[in-house]
Image (cartoon, rainbow, N blue to C red; front, side, top):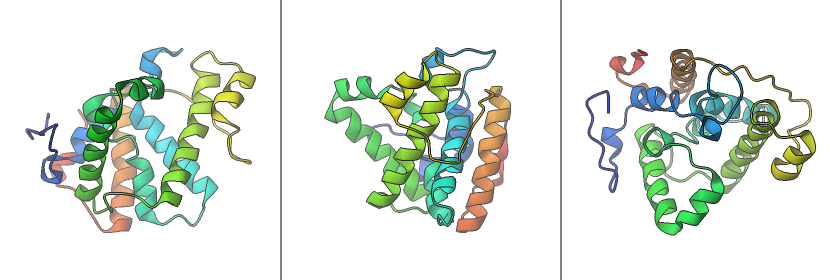
Length: 197
């Protein structure tokens, strides 16, 4: 990793995970494998910030630690990239187990339970699908009817106009969201994690 950390992919340790590495990687991983319109790809970092926002729209009293879980819901992709769900399914259980081990280590690193409660996982998944609805219709060439069929309707009262950000700006926004939520939860990373270049 750019931080100098060496992460064992088969047995990831929470001690080798840095938020600066996560933010840097996610800001450079494109949703939809980059098959979107516009000058910039819609990054996983920007997507993650939106998912946290949607989760709070759906549950305004959401505890900060679960808001942090929403922000980190795709954090493993800083190492493994963003794969579409059908491809993940085709790879089978070993891929899912690998992804789960990495997600558990990320959660532990930032003071969250390794596994989120089912209700929280369900909420985050709904917020993730709502964000995907907007991405599909605004960036990936899907019609509204097709997006509704695949992703379902976004939550009532929530609307989004997506403007994909350059990687350094997406990275800085992700880190800022993490800082705010980290302070609310009572965890803070090392100062060098805030390097955004």
